[in-house]
Image 1 (tube, helix red, strand yellow):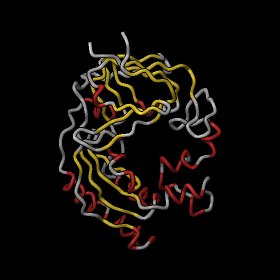
Image 2 (cartoon, one colour):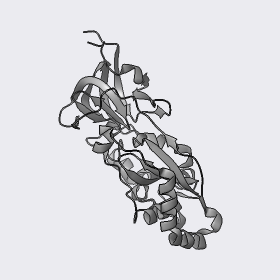
Image 3 (cartoon, one colour):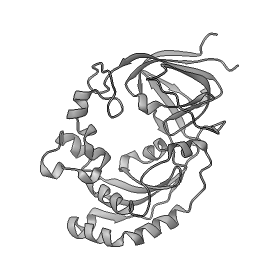
Image 4 (tube, helix red, strand yellow):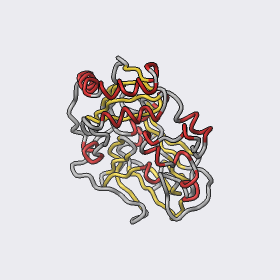
Amino acid sequence: MSSLVDVSGRLRKMPAEAGTPVEYVIRVGDTRIPLNDMIGHPIQIDYDGVIRCIHCDRTTKKSFSQGYCYPCFRKLAACDSCIMSPEKCHYHEGTCREPEWGETHCMVEHVVYLANSSGLKVGITRGSQVPTRWIDQGAVEAIPMMRVSTRQLAGFVEVACKQHVSDRTNWRAMLKGDVPAMDLVAERERLLVLIADDLAELRAAHGADALRVVDEQGLGLSYPVQVWPQKVKTHNLDKSPSAEGVLEGIKGQYLMLDTGVINIRKYTGYDVRFRVFPKP
């Protein structure tokens, strides 16, 4: 059977734009393929055994931090431990791996938000990454809670919030599509009361203007899904280099096939052949 799409190259994280539903594109090498219209079509992803670092382009036997080789993982600020634990930011100590990168990614306004992906969670992101971050997490609704001056301050607020609400997404529950709606405005007000003392301490240490509570509206998100999986099975390209099946939906960074789901972001840097076939 001839294919409608047949491209080869290095996989990257899927760009997405908020819409009704969210609009997805898959990047394979230099080719960008709109995916929403491909739902209902059989697709096939074949991994050729080569992983190339998304920063330096060297081949690597293993991908670190979603697409990097080990030397880049060790030297780049984007791979430092403070990315996962922003409260541990050490820019102010003069030990940032890449100070210029830190200035543009960490020493800028961040949003502390509440999202409903698989239940209530708290998260942080750069102001410029709203709503992209929410889409990547598969949130069905999200709302800003605070705007703060740096990534580290966002991390401090998140740590305070984690005493009362999770900072994790249950990705299996997120992919089943039965996420109950929440009153995020009420949850925001409740949480701000619970962390009031923590916020007072942070303002005393960093200045009142460094942390602002916001009364911004939330955003509801819907995803292009025809069939929700009843049981979530995963395709693992490291164990089985070919994933094929009918594309039934897209949510977060996952493609939902009738044979299982695949997390495209996990395979950033993998060289693949991507094909789309006519509907049966």
